[in-house]
Image 1: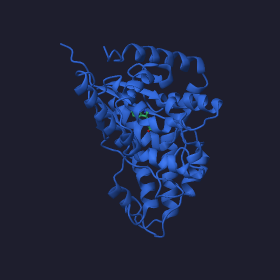
Image 2: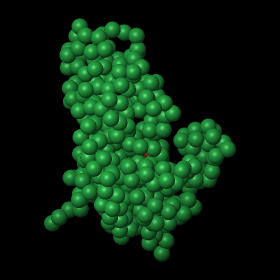
Image 3: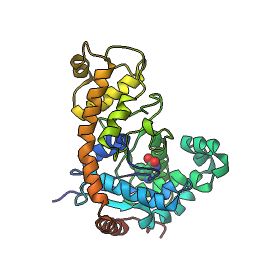
Image 4: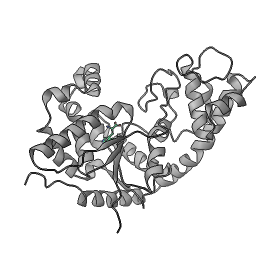
Length: 323
Ligand code: TRP
């Protein structure tokens, strides 16, 4: 008898282009899962509009992310790739879940508190309801596992609570999902401020490696990366976060352990090390960029593929929940 594969769902918000942090922290791990799980990977455009977007840019970034998934190794024959707003069941379920979410419960979300305080003028109800839409994304597919970064763990906890509450109140309806913390969940930090996570929305271009950066841009960003005062190459996240971040990048690109890297650079300085990191990153990122450019040059193919994904997603969900 064929046993059903467990379901995975995850997504990225298209608030900018894809960057190396997405690849290392998320997509690379999804690629490793695509054979063993039934995978749904979406572009979370409805989450992006909680912040004002330029429509043309949003459209571009949405397709960029979809193409980026494939360029990074997601196989559209094995996984369902789609755009969140193409599948109306997400917002439909959001409403029901909204009615099960306490005001206090939603107000407690760290990301909501940060975002609403930072920018009170552009604050909106969508920012408040953001985690409930995320819960719907997950529950509508009866996902068993959800790969998420640290910053989204609290939202996943809310998702679990909402599923349990609904199941208790009506009848067992939703699978209660587990977070999936990847075994190699390296956190990539900003190249200009290694105390901050690398972000696709950093106002300083040089802080972030984008997946479509040219070879020279990659080399130059690594060369100009902020490092700590020190001379030898030694992994020490606490005291030398800048150098350690570059070592994490080098480790990802070469597969070498930190001990091996330290050995490789005995007697050499930051300059030589940065040069090696730059070359390693060029080697890692060039094939991804080339595939990305190829995919992006054929929007019809991308649209067809995403339409197919949206159709499969549309017939999968569990939305007959109230009666
Ligand atoms: N909120 C997530 C982020 O910004 C993206 C996202 C939306 C997501 N819906 C999701 C991730 C469902 C996992 C599951 O990173």
